[in-house]
Length: 285
Image (cartoon, rainbow, N blue to C red; front, top):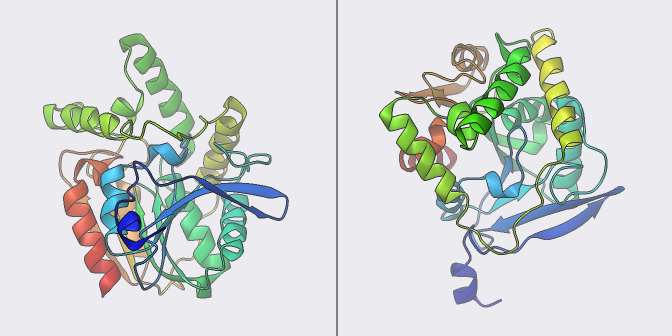
């Protein structure tokens, strides 16, 4: 592929590739591959596959960095049995990154992905340079074990109103939140060809079990994580109550916190332009 062709690659048309690590064939996409520096590995949220990433966020990061996204084991187009704990998902992510010959990475974890990122940095601290974790909280955080109940409730609300549940789960019910949700849902449908497989019911149930375990887990000592961390969320997160984000930032000794107004779990998608700017500044320091 020529340099001009690479420059035309965006989240809308970047090809899906696979790499085999152990007994798992991981589906992944990468762009911004000509960009120097530490690659950014993205860790996705509950029930999500590759197509759930916001194109504005991924393309924004890829303007300056090599960005790699992948499906967890047993999720989307990745093979294997889905993991039912954050620890297992972290080990799978480490396996994937080592198969990709990544010596050091920056992690961008959203929601469940932020929990996986915390496990990764504790397991393999030298693998991680910096972390961006959004819409997430620490192990044992308030209300995290109830994510399943909130998820099923909003799936039912979505069914009753013929709307995507993410409109309720990720965004506030204010005029600004409703508008942002509709815009986000349109953006994640921009990719028409080579779309990922949807998550299966068994994989969703495994992830919900992992979230319950994370919520019931005893708090972990994060004071030894001295990596720079950008922590962000909205001020009205229903899935992972915003109090957890503040708590997480306080526990991490080298963190900076961003709380967006009139926004929920998907605040970094609602405020994608501001978030990408902050993320690029944070990664460049």
